[in-house]
Amino acid sequence: MKKSGGILLFILVLAIVGPWLSPHEYQDTNFGEIFNAPSFAGMHFFGTDDLGRDLFVRTMLGIRITLLVAVVASVVSLLIGVTYGAVAGYVGGRVDAVMMRFVDTLYALPFIFFVILLMVAFERNFLLIFIAIGAINWLDMARIVRGQTLSLREREFVDAARLTGVSTARIIFRHIAPNLLGIVVVYVTLTIPQAILVESFLSFLGLGIQEPQTSLGSLVDGGVNQMEGAAWMLLIPAALLALILMCCNFLGDALRDFFDARKAP
Amino acid sequence: MLRYTLHRLLGAIPTLLLVIVLAFLMVHAAPGGPFDAERALPPEVAANIEAAYHLDEPLAKQLGRYVSGLLRGDLGPSFRYRDYTVAELIGTGFPLSLKIGLLAILLALMVGISSGTVAALRQGSMLDRIVMSFAMTGISIPVFVVAPVLVLLLAVKLQWLPAGWSGAPGAAKYILPVITLALPQIAYIARLTRASMIDVLGRDFIRTARAQGLGTKTIIRVHALKPAMLPVLSYMGPAIAAILTGSVVVEEVFGIPGLGQFFVRGALNRDYTLVLGIVIFYATLIIALNLIVDILYGVIDPRVRNE
Image (cartoon, rainbow over all chains, first blue to last red; front, side, top):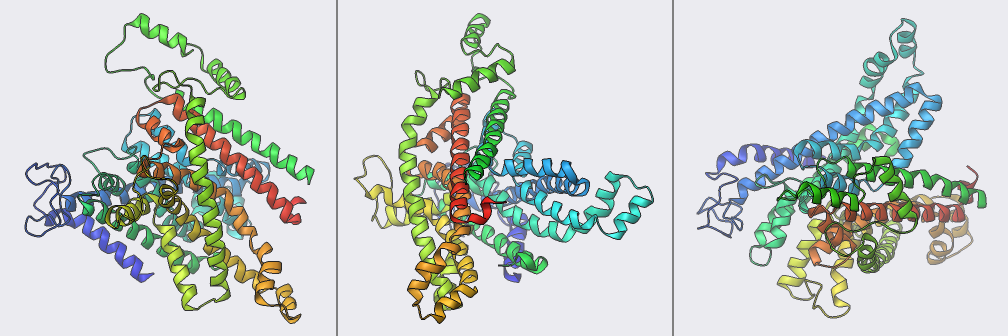
């Protein structure tokens, strides 16, 4: 767990600081230096691509955008999931039954295809990608939060709040929500790799982040097209993406076992 | 059992309707029409085209028209592939995708269940640890990373297998796509099998079987396998969805002319009706297969039926 966290932190710092260590810019093309293999001589640590752009700087940008999308999307799913789950759990009764039935129905939907549909129908922009990816991943969160809320609402401090005339909305957000923090944090760490996966999947298909911006998914896509002559274009972003996903999964699993012993395998 | 089946069947219908309405509205809420070209059409022509595709009608009427078409298996014309209907395009691409998907599921079940069982029997051994760390890696690394790296290694560098689809001979071209598609599922199924097998092997009825002097093989085959397979069976729904998603990537990487490729092309060309049709087709497929899994679950585990 410490190792995974350390590697993630290192990658994050590198992605933020990295571009300053290189004399190149992510969007600058240089047709005199296309398909340069990685070397220290030209300061192209990760080589260059088919347009002579420096891949080190582009990869760092890709990591930043991939992580940014993942974090923001996870926050979106957190907001939807916690609100939905807390309301269903707190209000209870028939409302709860209907709300959870709706979640069950949504579970059966192939969300990723809906996101693609959304990308086709609307102009592709950052905001839409955030919201679309966030909207996929809130179902688990809603279920877990509802379960916790069901037990929390029977506790004395909630009764006390109700007796003193605090409104339902205020009880949910001021008294219930803070007590959900531990479990919510765990599930956010598990949501982040899923969001990374969706974003890179979309970008890989050319439906996500658009040029000259980039993400790890679109870098892998670019690498696939050139892999016979320039294997580094594929291997470096692919390895980094795999490393980030593995670290996130290990970290999330470890946190879950730590906070939620019942779920431990 | 009949009641249980009917109950499940009735549960699937609202989901299906929700899918259709949601997908339809999403496409129609989009700014701009499907015929907004670089070069503006004369207004009379634009109006003519809109009338031909019924785009000038109220939304509810269009939805009604679309749903009644769906019931007859008519998904409308493709906006980009001239002279083809969406149903024809799906009919062209799907058989190939189905073949590859089925092979991948079979491979995943065979390898996943056997390696998970072996790992469970030798819990804590070197073999167990190797299988489990392979499984964790397989779960973490997405198909669109595995696919090109395998192509680079096995097809481009070592030249053991063909890299592309067209022109490659016979069965060899299936090997890489099927393995790539199956890998993450193998990993997941192995983990599931191991966990539930360990659980089952610790139960009393297994101890009784041991006490009667039955061999490990018989115990696994006759007593342990069936209850241990329940989590794997309920994972089949998500597995099928994952295989469908993966097939989109695999077909793109290997250049396989299947349904996934039509889907990506359609998405990049903004072929609204094609993408809408394929999303509804995929969703129906997933819902139907989930239904089958649910019913099978009821057959195997009678406790579920009476809930």
